[in-house]
Image (tube, rainbow, N blue to C red):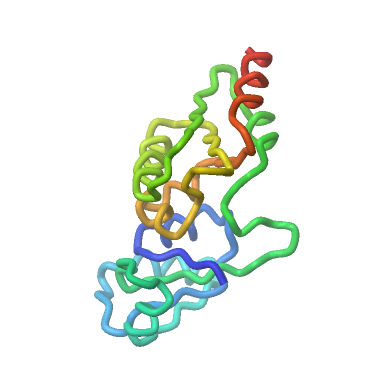
Amino acid sequence: MKIIYGVSPVIEAIRSGRRPIDRILLAAGAQPARLRELVELARQRRIPCLQRDRRELDERAGRANHQGVIALLRPEKGRAESGYVGEDAILDALGPTPLLVLLDGIEDPQNLGAILRTCEGAGVEGVFLPAYRAAGLTETVAKTSAGAIEHLRIAQVPNLVPLIATLQERG
């Protein structure tokens, strides 16, 4: 089962509603004031919040800083839990003066997360990542992006060169 961890990434995943969340695990003894917004959003969306021992969260998140919060994603038929959308979903929804970002060779997930956070803040309509020799959308990217990946359209393409040609044809 895929996970999202960290307070901001989980809040943004709940807000966006793009990926179905099965349940949220909260570390026993976590600061309630810090989690108030998260718990309220989860209650509104009818997502169960369960308290668990911090060691269980540590095991699920590996060595990552989960901040006492882990969301477990529910696999849904016909829907990717990866966070990617299709290339055409981005191209067909472009406005009159689109802002797109094509990233090549970004292998560090923390760098990718920081770039995606900036893209979301700048109003980017779509991000394209190569399928090979590049970081993908992982839990680390979700955490580093502070949940920005939940609001961006991100497509993974086999090769950026044909995409560039397609974009040039579209003007």
